[in-house]
Length: 142
Image (cartoon, rainbow, N blue to C red; front, side, top):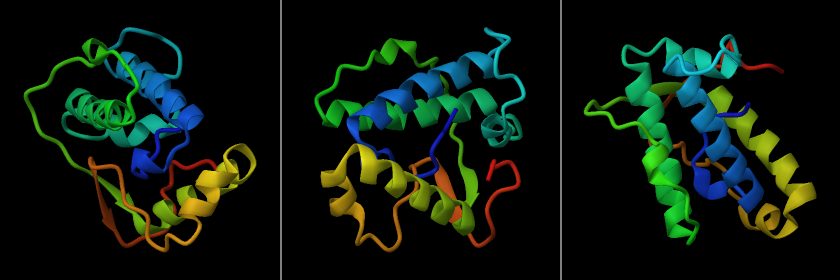
C-alpha cells in the first residue's frame, strides 16, 4: 500500500488508479469494514489524526478531482461523506523520499512523465498535507 504524500498530478495512469484503489482500501480499514491491512504503517498518519475518517475522505476527494481533470470516471459515490475539515503534516524528508521513489517508478514505467517531472526541485504535496521540516517519517518502510 502506498498512500502518496505527493500531489497525485505527478502520477502516471497506473499510479493514479493504484492510489485510488489503495486509498479506498484504507478508507475501508479506517471504517472497520475490512480486517486486512489493519496495521499497515501507511495508515498510521490517518489513524493518529483526530478525525481519521474525515482525513481519508478528503484524501480521496483530491484523488477523485485529479482523475476527473484527466477525464477518468472514478466513482465518487465510493467516498464516504464527511462534514469535517482536516490537515495532515508530512515532513520534507518524507517528501524527498517519496519523490525519489516515484521518479524511479516513472523512469521505468512512464519515461515521458519521468522526463517531464525530473527538473522539479520541490514537488507539491497532496492538498491534504502541510509540509514541515524533518526527516523521513518513522512509519515509512525504507
